Image (cartoon, rainbow over the protein chains, first blue to last red):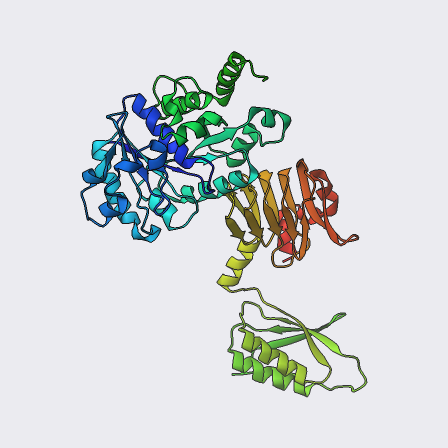
Length: 265
Length: 228
């Protein structure tokens, strides 16, 4: 029996889809059977980032409206046998999907997969409600900006009303030099305001954008800052021997990497 | 159904008349009796108005009954009702009174978009985040950080205060007063409270200890019972 994790943020553009793709990849690298689920109906992106756009035949709406079987809509990743994608529909509307249909699909997927990662659309309307409907856990993605922390706070408030485990936090797009100068919100400050468990921090890395544009999640690369961060988070999700590292550890990894590249820390 | 027992006893005091009304007979009988008793009194046209205090004993009066009583007494010359006192109140009034005077303890993070409304005083164990709002008809005490909006004395109690372990509010509201955070970047302060300063007619924020002088009535529950 697998577990379903919804990845959400409230605000758009903080990296939900990127995080979903990379965590899925990192979990698959750990030999877990993973299904990525894109619920952003009408604005699907996850397939693009995974580089699976050209393989889509059926989508999530087709499954929900029983035009095809769930298995027919699943797309196997081109790199892993263990990684699958259930793409969103590009032509339908968010209201075509219902929370009930989501629950039904997730229950079915859980038989098959270890992890189901649900990519949530921005906003707190129908799309969000669909995405959290069948989830067991939630990961809230935020960036060190006031607006996205505010939206994350709102989302956490909404998630607390759902029947979920307490959500965990991922802080994305950290620019170390700006944080040091105080031009960006401090990690401590963000954690203090949101007061939920910190799952990981991810540096702002050009490689992420490069990799996404190639349809290949950055987590494949063995040595970039961002891929290490995503792999760390996936190990924390697995709860394996790694105790939950504090972000201090992450930082030291970062600074080591930086030193390696001869960057000013 | 008369005379052998006095249903209404009248006492003159320095502050006017006190009517003690027996609580074991019906209201209509009271009205008749009152009408009779007060009519027989001699009235001096030049005398000043006399204030009347009514003691009802263990009798409860509806609004209409109370009005009837007031009207009756007012219709007599030179008499005006100052107060009607009763030993009993309605259960719902008692509950409301309890609600308004009780300290509610809430343990919660008040997050962006969440609004919590409380009757009476509130002790919040947790934070109010930016975009969150806590409204109370009484005082607000926060064991945590206030980063959002707190509104004390919601129904117009200007004596209400807001106190927090960490004070960095977006807005502080007390009764009909609103103050907001400055436009420049500011850090919060620890252990402070906000209240309306009578002289300056605005909300001021000062250290917690000042409340002892500014709002001594916060002390003790008994005091509030006496104040009704």
